[in-house]
Length: 88
Image (cartoon, rainbow, N blue to C red; front, side, top):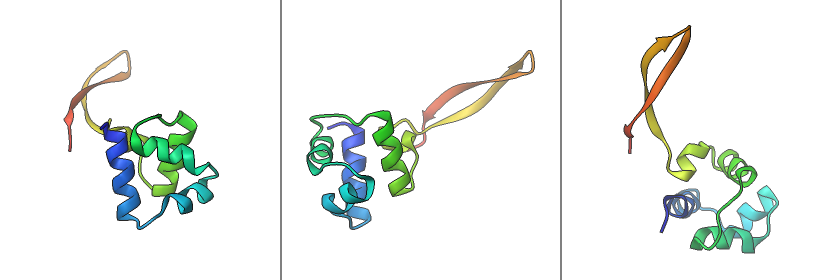
């Protein structure tokens, strides 16, 4: 099971929401959400944005890319960053 699937299931449970409630609120068919929950399909970027707004989380959190970024150095007035270990 991928991290998105785990986090979607967790958000549904933590918020006490049914698939029907979420689907009606964000305007998608229940089958679409069901396929995300089972890992059969993955959401588009637009769908991820809708879910992140609905659950008040970041898209990075939904897809499991919530890494810490640390300032590395500055070059030609541009700050450059590198990815650190996952904070979770």
